[in-house]
Image (tube, rainbow, N blue to C red; front, top):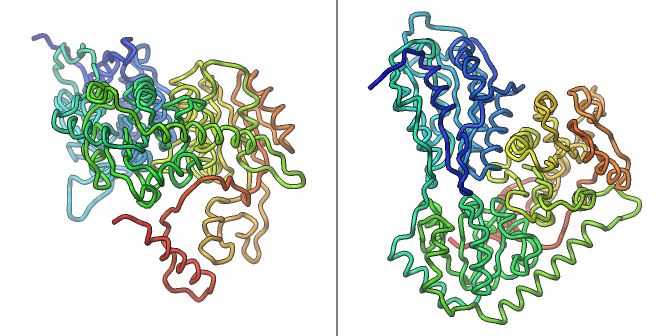
Length: 618
């Protein structure tokens, strides 16, 4: 065996740069598309030098905030259907702890990202160093330990040779379909710079080929029996459909057996929006067609979804249905007292077909599906093109304005969003014709994801127009990667809906029964304070974007059409109301109400809550 003398950081970079993956379409591409880096004293001299040396093979991208650059890396992986990743590196201290929110987001959403924070000295000779956390009970503790429960794989590199084992283990975790999620290698500052004899073969890793797990024969037989005896089955399409590239297989399966398909946030775009068996969004923010069928289904076939509360109506949405859970992760497949079918989505759908030959859902169920689907398509047209004179527009009308400004393009726009009212409206109303054209982070519902996430999507899909839709509250939380998008020449169209506060939570607060408090900006001014008037368009221009504040929907449409023809990142701000939402569809959501209160309205809300809870399945 031959060896090359190099530092640990150089070996890490060389391995990442050389690593390739065979994607679902048969192409061989670099597995790691680049490293987002904010340098500090804990990583600039070690990993920083190695990245500079390997910059031609492994691009380094400068960001402005550690959390948001990790969001961008995660969004890149999601837009790449988990087949490729990006890495992020920070110094020890606040740079490292800024990764915690993003790590949690990736963990919840089952998305891969490689976190490479610096760590304190393995030798401990200069301890305590700048930014070192000194624990009174554990000498080996650093701030990076907060990332242990937030990652699928964690290791601290205290000897250079450890990278030979730890990096492949981290990559194994990120490429495991069942355990996919964030991995963290905490890189001790001194160890990054230490040289060792690196085996030549570590610098030439084999091409990654992602596994497709088949179903167990017994589980497959039971799933076949469950489906064959169902008369009113309903498919829930989750994110696993997209990550498995199972959209076409799901379409063929649904058509062969006459089964309606409802989409979770993670699975939206599994079927084209206008497919007659696509009954739209499911759950708390679901479409009326999907939720009506959910109430009557006798079997729910959950494909690639982790069945969060928005999908199940807090376990109150499917009163008469058995559950069959097809998921590559056994933990998710067996949820909600379901029958588990543990396998890759595309593989299992193919395996099911021989045993289902000649079986179809009740013809009346299929006919009803087509009618409800067509009715909802017409209703979406009405909701997104209506104009209520004399009041501010609401989210649905802005969504319609974005859609109608688009040229006829087979690729279509990718919409990016994360938190607030917008995800609910987009889940119901956005029309996605291609897998991945709906990119909404609603597992962690993380305010501040939107702009950074849009940048990650644009890096993964440069040929498509990426439209970030974000409320003013979320925009103000984390907007600095607007400057990064300009710096990198990755154009975004950012639509800011300004309702002057946290309008979504204001409505939830009102449903609880007590008065407006601490949400809308004008209601948060204490004695001696002053109302704040924030010029979001001016702020965006200060970060290098081209920005405009439009006065109405007509100006918005014109601004969107002009933005599509520009090369630089565009920001369009429009005033909206939080008081109007799309009332069609939806179902109950378990949000606990106070059992005791001095306010009569709160006590009434609690009584309604207790009545609604009786619908829940245990």
